[in-house]
Image 1 (cartoon, rainbow, N blue to C red):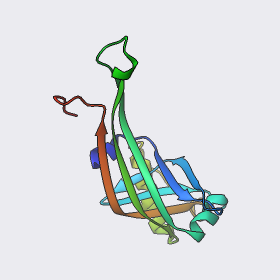
Image 2 (image 1 turned 120 degrees about the vertical axis):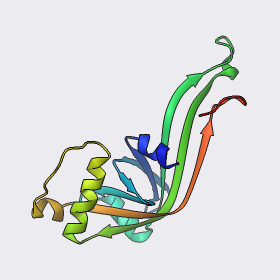
Image 3 (image 1 turned 90 degrees about the vertical axis):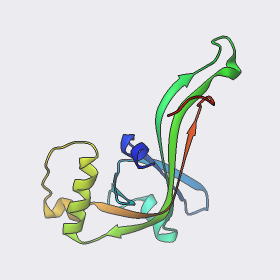
Image 4 (image 1 turned 180 degrees about the vertical axis):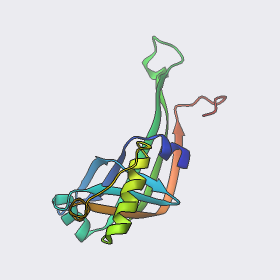
Amino acid sequence: MEDIIGQCPICFVGMTDLDGNPYVLPMNFGYQAGTLYLHSGPEGGKLGMLAKNSRVCVTFCAGHELTYQSPQMACSYSMRSASVMCRGEVEFVEDLEDKRRYLDLIMRHYTDNEFGYSDPAVRNVKVWKVAVQEMSGKVFGLRGHEKI
């Protein structure tokens, strides 16, 4: 499942809005040792939602290959892919050095470049830490004899 997470450029974070409705948004992320790291601006509706209910469901999906048994039979088409779903609670990181370390971890998911962060920039970002409490995965679209 961690290999699938590592293949994904974004994740989808599901939470509950202030009216009790589902709310899902795509986000950049980093992952290490059972913990997800995300970041956002310092204000906005999602922060109010998380203040009321910090539980989130984060999903990842990799692969996305259209397959079929017969090109003329619609019901024989399938999307071969693999997904992971993680559940946990958001904890906001306040320590500036911890924020820098986790921002570096997020950036390492996308590039090997080294970065520096000014104190005002670090103060102006929310870093989310989600210890994964539950993780499940699924491979779909495979025929009985196929392996991922």
